[in-house]
Image 1 (tube, rainbow, N blue to C red):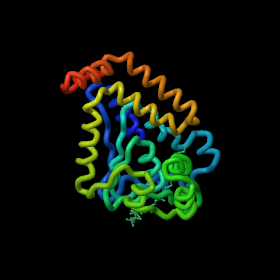
Image 2 (spheres, protein in one colour):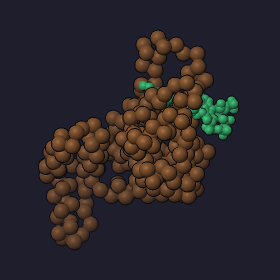
Image 3 (cartoon, helix red, strand yellow):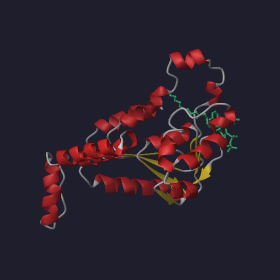
Length: 225
Ligand SMILES: CCCCCCC[C@H](O)CC(=O)SCCNC(=O)CCNC(=O)[C@H](O)C(C)(C)COP(=O)([O-])OP(=O)([O-])OC[C@H]1O[C@@H](n2cnc3c(N)ncnc32)[C@H](O)[C@@H]1OP(=O)([O-])[O-]
């Protein structure tokens, strides 16, 4: 997670990068926190040292991050996928919060982001039983945006990322921040936040270029400013 966070930070600063796709292997996206590492730890260690809190660093990134999930996304693996902005799944992917089966509970958003993503009934069932759901169930519940054959998942996710990259980077970042604000704010505040961002797009050259290109029936040439 330290290496991933360092890479994501670099990509955020790299003007050549418009969006990021992260993936695992066909067998697993990630099986969660290392149970063998956690086994000997005491409360005082994990509390004093903010154990694993650095995982959430990736939610501070401005550029869109897509999770391409094949195989297992369990515990912290499911939570990392949910820290991303879009989840695409391979048809055999499995999403679960099995922490209850090892005597603990989700610690990186499994009880919070999951509930916001799929609602209380399904989130509660997953967190209390520890049983995973399939990619098809995850798509139906709204956790996953789209399902692809396992061997095409990464290529298709990159195509979606490239589609995002055709737009102005600065406007894409505003759009991401606006959607994410809906997770944090009551509706009235969220709408105010959105309208402020909408007005702010009028301070960019790319807004003028985008609308101008439409009117002149040509492709826009965004300058990311
Ligand atoms: C602010 C706080 C932030 C907190 C952040 C995170 C908190 C998070 O919510 C807590 C967790 O993630 S709790 C975790 C929640 N996650 C879970 O509970 C998932 C636990 N894992 C499983 O249920 C199964 O291993 C799978 C279904 C993934 C694969 O089944 P399969 O295909 O039959 O394969 P297999 O034979 O079973 O495994 C192969 C090898 O991998 C090993 N290994 C696997 N996962 C490991 C792990 N997490 N750890 C260590 N090792 C793990 C396994 O021991 C074995 O090693 P061996 O040396 O060869 O014996």
